[in-house]
Amino acid sequence: MNKPIGYWIKRLDAALEVQLDTTLARLKLSRRQWQTLNTLAEATMLPDELEEAVRPFWGTDVRLRERELASMVGRGLITMIDERLTLSERGRETYHQAQRLVEEARLDLSMGIGIDEYAMAVSVLERMSLNAEGLAR
Image (tube, rainbow, N blue to C red):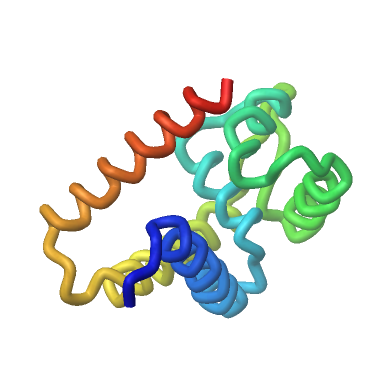
């Protein structure tokens, strides 16, 4: 198939969304909740810091973010200590379970692709993204 890169990027993005949603559904997590757990697994954060960190994944829909965060707090995955959001013990367990599932899925997705090929593809996409963003200014 002689399709442009945009075609393949959109097709891959859509396939990754479906695959990730299917994988995370086993733990009753959404993709956005996984990204939040993944972010908070690295460090505790003030709510504004978390918002900034996950904005590329969540977009600007404040109601969606509030609903997803409320769900995570309600399930006992996230708690607040000294005004900072952090994973609870249950949240850390869920994070580790999700991390294993996501890693297994990544291995399946990259089957037949060498480490160097993967690194090159990511590097090229990063540079093209930065170039496109620069041209849009």
